[in-house]
Amino acid sequence: MQARIDKGGVSNGTVTVFVQHTSCSLTMMENAAPAARRDMERFFEKLVPENADYEHDDEGADDMPSHIRMVLTRTSETVPIVDGKMQLGTWQGIFLFEHRRASHRRKVSVTIIGE
Amino acid sequence: MQARIDKGGVSNGTVTVFVQHTSCSLTMMENAAPAARRDMERFFEKLVPENADYEHDDEGADDMPSHIRMVLTRTSETVPIVDGKMQLGTWQGIFLFEHRRASHRRKVSVTIIGE
Amino acid sequence: MQARIDKGGVSNGTVTVFVQHTSCSLTMMENAAPAARRDMERFFEKLVPENADYEHDDEGADDMPSHIRMVLTRTSETVPIVDGKMQLGTWQGIFLFEHRRASHRRKVSVTIIGE
Image (cartoon, rainbow over all chains, first blue to last red; front, side, top):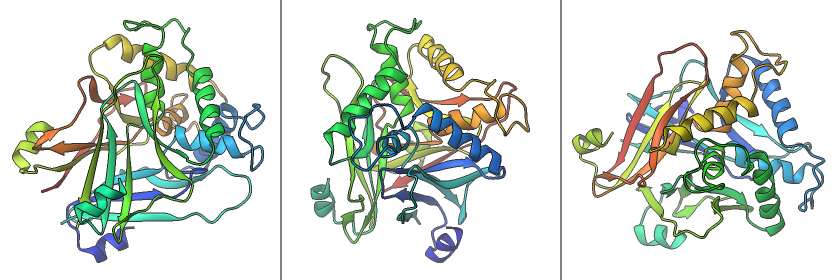
């Protein structure tokens, strides 16, 4: 994304990253420890279990849990740009959090605004 | 909202939808299946129950749960605009998620930014 | 923040508040009742307990819970500006929600966009 910002010529503004789906999330996360991401996945598997007698299960047992996990997390992140640099903190990374079992193509959109 | 974008003349930018309350949410959701919204409501009723001995209950048993459900979900959504079109995915809709039992008037604000 | 908006000369747009950390949140909250904030803290202590056998515990028992509580809440809030005024509702306030036990310096960034 920093490359897009460099190219776009915006010095001060924001970059918004947005995912066009309701069964995955785009969320800030600790970027250094893969163990933290595994703990996160386990937490959500337990908090929003698959076998919870959902009314909506058109696409299988992981259908409704994926929507609930999405609503509990985030669909977009907006990050400031100052002097042409995205102002992520040292440990911040933006991650796609996949909530379905099967692999899916996911479409992420990046919008840079400012001057 | 697309009508507002058409009128506003912004080709590339973002639209931010924001709800001015702390006892309801404005959140992305699966837009086709009403059953998914019913499952969502049932999930939050169970995760954040009314009878949980809250210290803050000035407005009744649904007062504090409404604030917690709001914090667990979202107050605003920001969606990209590309070539004058709001870039929602096929299954994405933005919904007002009411957390109080009685009906309330809710104020939603729409801001379009870009050029 | 209203002072920054007054000074910046933006009449219509948005203000984005962003926290550069993964172990605290920046979230909308009921601004009048301190009891509501105490209930909120108790809810998250119970929902995301410290003693849950996390794989990631480099910085102690409150390390992983802090990341999960962050992902369940928010890293930024974007609020509309209309006629130079931040459009927060009567009961809305933006709060830093600290998830670590020890005190930390926290860096918050404010970005105003519009014209």
